[in-house]
Amino acid sequence: MQKTPFCLSVGQLLPYTMSDSNSTDFTNPSTFILLGIPGLEEAHVWISILFSVIYAIATLGNFTILFIVKTEPSLHAPMYYFLCMLAVTDLVLSTSILPKMLSIFWFNIREINFSACLTQMYFILSFSAMQSGVLVAMAFDRYVAICDPLRHTIILTNPVVANIGIAVVLRGAMVILPIPFLARRWPYCRTNIISHTYCEHIAVVKLACADISLSSYYSLSAAFFVIGLDVFLISVSYTQIVRAIFSLTTKDARLKTFGTCGSHICVFLSSYIPALFSFLTHRFGHNVPQHLHILMANMYLLVPPMLNPIIYGVRTQLIRDRLLQPFTHKGT
Image 1: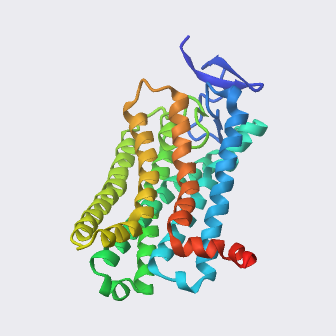
Image 2: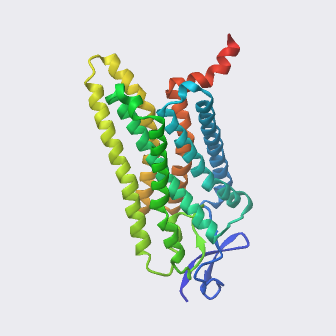
């Protein structure tokens, strides 16, 4: 008899046959079972500690950014409004996966409701798209500030910033919306076991006993439309910025101007490189161990939200000065 993947039984992973499973006749399962990181069960506790520390730093850092920008009038400018948008998307992304992950690692609570699974999938994908859109908005802000500084306040008024924010949210929400609806329509008659720590899209739809080409093609098209377009726009913006910087007459002016973009470049790299690596290994790295796929899929959702507030806190003088203000007052 042909065997399927693994089934969870009394906290252990035991092989089972289709006749042993009670999940052979459902079209939409009531629950899925998340396995965590198969192959690294012994290290689940240590991995959970690492991820918890990352999440704590990300939460503290992003809430600090939001608080500083809200309470400091000098930071009420487009650049910092976009930074607040980035902080919100980072908080939602990391919070979308970590609580359920810890319940798997710490309490062996592996079940997730079918609708909750699709909701988690939607939040992860839509806010990833929103995060990418915010990075484009930040690149546009830097382009205007450096290439057309006299018109910066005229072009990026508060209503324009608000409209950009609305456009970023609507694009992320609408482009991703078909993905969970497509995932819901497939029949899941093989198994309801997901070898992952969260409801990653491909890991879920691969369980369907149907032709999932539509889901696969749409998700791939959405990724190219969102990420591909955004990377192109960011590249164009920074090409123009670099040209403007090198047209400056003095070396000090070039370094000072480039320094204002340093934090943005670091954030772009920390956001896109892990995501790109995870995407490429998932699509083409068939010889890459499964646990490495899963670890990378978690890291690209958890590490950028931790790094972004640190990068801006260290490299942006206004934020750094506001953050250190209570300590410098105590010392004087």
